[in-house]
Structure formats: C-alpha cells, structure tokens
Length: 236
Image 1 (tube, helix red, strand yellow):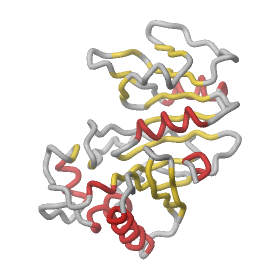
Image 2 (cartoon, helix red, strand yellow; image 1 turned 180 degrees about the vertical axis):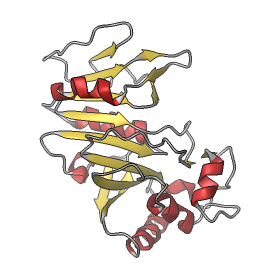
Image 3 (cartoon, helix red, strand yellow; image 1 turned 135 degrees about the horizontal axis):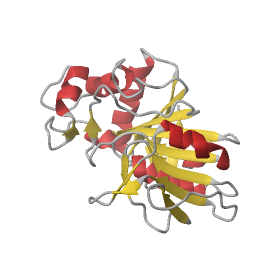
C-alpha cells in the first residue's frame, strides 16, 4: 500500500514527524498525495525551504501577513528564513491561530542535520500538543553503522539512551524507540513508527528482527515498514 493508505488518515489530522532518515521526504510525499484537502507544511524547529513543486504558497510571519486562501491547497508557513536557507518554525501559539484553516497539518518536530540517527536533548522532539499522530522515522540502513559524530546527531544523548558498542545494533534501535527519553518521549497521541528504506531482502530481514524485538516489549506503537522513495509500505 502507499503511504497515505498505510497511515489511515482521518478527516482532520495534525501530524508531527520526528526521528531521522526521511522526515522531510515523508512530509513532501504526503502533501503531494493528499488531494482535495487544505494542507499546512510547517515546523516547530527548522527545515530547509521545500521545493516549489511541493507547495502553492509560502507565508513568513515576520515579513508577510498570513491569510486564509481557499484556492491554495498546500501552504508553507514559518517565521522567517535564516542565512542557512532554513525556515525557522512556529511556536505552539502560532499554530493555534492557524490550525483551523487546514484539514491536514504536517509538522516537522525534530532536527537531525541530515544524519541517519540521533539522540534527543531535554527539549526534543518538539511535539505540538494538539497532534493527532506522531510519526517516528527510523532509517533501517543505520543498522551496523559506526557510532560516531559523523553518523549520529547528538552523539552524547544517543549514548545515554543506548548500551552503545562500536556499531549500531538492533538493541540500540529498540532503545531509540522505547526508551522513556527517546523518540516518543513527548507524545500523548497515536504513535507510529515508520521504518524507512526497507528496499532489499537483507533490509527486510533486519526490519523484521527489529519489529519482533519491539513487539516483545511494546504493543501500543503502530509499526509501518517500507520505502518513502518507492511509496510502498506494509503495516504490522
């Protein structure tokens, strides 16, 4: 099934996307595939300016006045764009003021500096309290990856979460998902783990081992695995 089908979207959804290894791609894919609905793309942290193919208009609250536009299907809203070409995101008060104007809100609530894994500091992830779904993205190609600053954002926080060795193990991935200070620590709504980049037989084998290990401890997280790139997913 495709991503939209796998997520089983309702009429009104506020989706915060966290983790590493595909957050922006997931949001762009969803925004493109959701038809006949008004879609907001925003962030509570920072995101690179999306491709113009993804959205119909952009509002920067520090320089342009936001207005509700019925003809614009996908709208990007942020505070301003910094020198790194990143959109500085909205606080919860800003989101409160505009969330009723949209059918679906897609909010990136985590930063990973384009690395495959991360640890979380005390204020992360930044999950909008009105979220109906929180999707945690986990890159299966991080398995057996060397544990170092080059590969992992906030390495010290990652090491606190996991019983680290020299390379990323299934156990490390389980800790990322299930540790009380890990991926879903600020989540009080539906939790969805999306295991991304499952595109080969070996990656499928690793993903199934991970799923079995998670399900030994936790059954309140919906798990989806597959490929954002190929838009092909399976629900556990």
